Image (cartoon, rainbow, N blue to C red; front, side, top):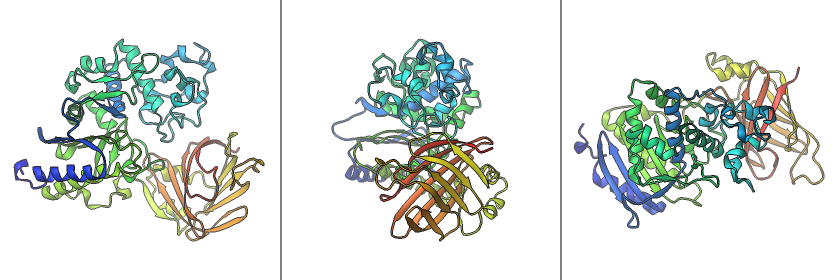
Length: 487
C-alpha cells in the first residue's frame, strides 16, 4: 500500500495526534516519518525546525552509538573493565586495589545496559565536582551486571571514554566518525564542571536532529556489518526493567541505551517527552519534543499514541504482531503464572527457561546478606515460601520497621506473616528473559499493595532488588541487597 492510500497516514490523522497530545501535555513538536518520507511536521508556535531544544537522555543513545563505533573499529571491547581507562580517578590514583571490587569488575557493557553497581547517579550527590571520578569513588550498592538500575553516571563515564580515546568532544566525534548520523553543526552537549560532555543528559539539538538519528538507526539495522550487528543487539531486550518502571511503556526491556516498547518497537528516550519511537517493520519514526517534567505518568500518552499508530498500520497491512496483549510473556516478558500450585511444579513446565533453571537449583538454599542499612540478614527459598530474616530494629527506626522472620507464601491465597500483622496475599512469579526472577506479593486484606522482589542468582551469590507499592508497613522493603550462599 502506498502512503498516499492509507487513511492511517493521512495529514488529518497526524494532526489529530498532535492535537490530542497538545491537550494533555506541553507539546513542542511532532514529526512522523515513514519509508523515506517526512509525512508530518508541526510545532508549537514558540518552536520551529531550527529551535535548539534540550534532549536529555537521548544523549545516551548517541553515546551508545559512538561506543559501538569505537568497538567496531577495534579501539575498545565491550567486555573491557571501564576502570582500566581511568586510573587517575581511583580513590588512590593509579592503585586499582583502592577501588571497591564491584566497581573494579564493572564493564563497558554493564554501563550500556544500566547494570552498573550504583543505584543512584553518583555525581548528583552533594559536593561532587568531579562527575567522572564520583563513579569510581562512591560506595556501590550491588554487584554489576545483574539487575537494571537507572544510573546516568555510567553513561557519563562512557562519554568521557569517547572523548579520552578520540581527543574530540562527543558531537565532534559523531560528526567526524559517523557523518551519516547527520548531527547538525548547531547541536552541542552541555559539559560538566571539568569540561567533559554530559554523555547521559547533555544533548541539545533540533527536532530534525532527532529525525536524523532515527533514520540513521533504521538504516544501521539493515547493515550486514559489525556495526549493524551492534545496533541490532543494542535495540534488543537485553535486560528486564519491570521493577523500576514508572509507567507501562517503560517496562518492556532495555538494550544498549535504547528502550524496548510494545509491539516489537523501541525508542530513544529523553526526560520530559523527548522521544524517537522506532518501528523497523514499517520503517516508521515518531519524534516528539515536549516538557512533561513534574507531570507524573504523562509520558504514557506518547506511548499510547505511537502504539495506536503502529497497531493501525499492522491492521492495514494484515499483520497480527499486535494481536497479543502488550504485557504477554510471549513477547519476551518472561513466564508468568499465579502460584496456585507448588513452585517446583511451575518450574518443571518451563525446562528451557534460564530463569527457571536458576530458581530451581536454589530451592532449599539460604543466602546470607552483607551488612546493610535495611536490616536484612538472610533469605531462604523453599518450595512453598520465601523467608526473609531481619535484625531487630533500633529504637530510632522508622515506624513500621520490624525484625525477625518475614514469611512470604508462594501459594495463592495464603497468609503473609511478619511480626504483629498477618495479611492474606496472592503471589505471582515471572521468570524473566534475562535470567532474573520476579516475585510479586500482593496484600489483599486490610492492607492493600504489592511487594516486588527481583532475584538475580549465581552459583555463589544473590542480588535482590526490592520495591514496595504499599504505604503502611515495611519501610525498609526498597532498594538493593547482596548476599552469598550459606555453606
